[in-house]
Length: 387
Image (cartoon, rainbow, N blue to C red; front, side, top):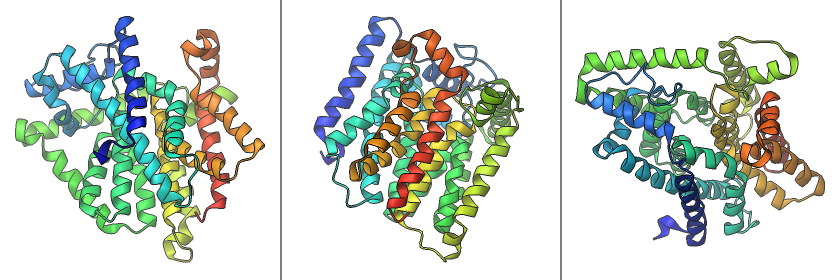
């Protein structure tokens, strides 16, 4: 089946995930605590309970996604949690493969002439680049791979002018995690008006789907509870790698939780200013520019909002484009800089570095700083492409 090509990388990817499954079970660490939140919240929903405002398992285990997301996890509730978590682990293992493959396919659209590294080498390097964040994703059973897959598949369908399926994927993506709405900006620059209208219509329809189970009034109450939970999450949690944390790490200036909205707004304004001439038609907005912009904004998300470190998987597509540039015009200086940035971005693990060094890295927000460095590095490299 073409869907699962290239087969050698499918075996490598699933082999890595299978090894992870074996190690987790052997060490009694196959817990998937994030998935437990989704599972228990969906059970609460179907049993007329309240999925919001209560911790499922861990003290931070609040369900923070939109009510429609509960329907996605509803089929798991047919099974016991022990069975459901195995099914979920298998599912996200396949999602990892499709994320890598979409990175390859979009890389070819970004730079159609690239032929180095070869397919298997490109995909294997991406797996290597993401191994620390991917390991934590698999351990927690989170849905970041699903979100990234929705984004990449939506971009692919947009480039193929398949507006309706693309809009449905973007609608689901923006509802599950509203911070992905920052991807609307390149769609505006590209004047994808029909796609945007269909996306907003899709969001409306998907938002109403829980009413089929609990009625309109209860659906409205669920959305109110969701918004309250998101507000509590933004004010009550901390991430070492956001812009606000980076400012505190290096200046000791404590910015309030609402500053993340300031940074989001500034990011949007700067982007629109940079691309204003492309919007007006004075400059041509190329496919490479469109893809690169979407990948940059996706990579910026964990710097903008309070998240866990595995959310830096969102930088994976951008790493693929950097790899294409480095293979196209290699130089010792560029490769050395990339290796340094990658070390701080992708090697911060207690298992690799030990707790003291890893904690010290967190104190100085090294993942967040390195992520910004990788974004800046890509912006420098992309000058070689008409983007």
